[in-house]
Image 1 (cartoon, rainbow, N blue to C red):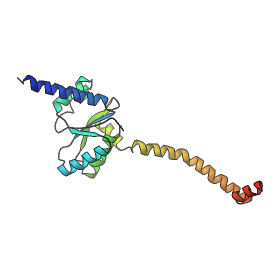
Image 2: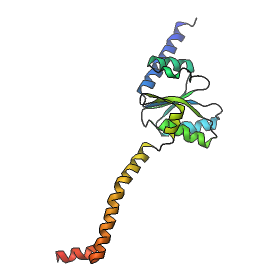
Image 3: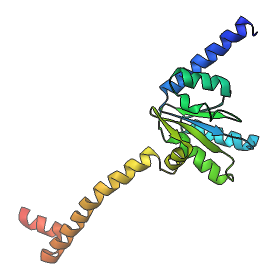
Image 4: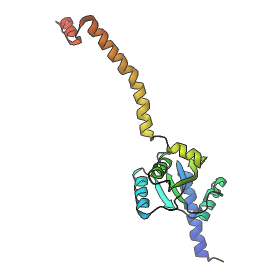
Length: 177
């Protein structure tokens, strides 16, 4: 039977992990089998730059933590080599970074499953999220589509003005003078 000190430290680890999972906008479980130290360092740097916390987790403690907060769906996934990419920022970042890294490194990493904003998602769903651009890139695309009609209108009005009387600056001078 484990001594009380070890048991208390494991309970504290489960509580901390449960709190981390509950407060995260996204948590992705990753199978990292076969990754080299250099590749792991590169991956950790990418996660750090995106504000994602990446740690290797113990399956049993993670299972207890997930079950504690109501995520019983991970019982089958939590076996073998498992790491956790967790963030309170951009919910797409962990899945996107794992997908991009896997493409560059011959599919060494595999998403097992995860949580995005309280919803449990399968590996396939997270891989689809991983294909999306970042939140800032999506916002830029939306703003670009809003700007396109206004820009087109300005160009058309300028062409009409040039066709009718020439230069707009000359027209402005004649009305002032």
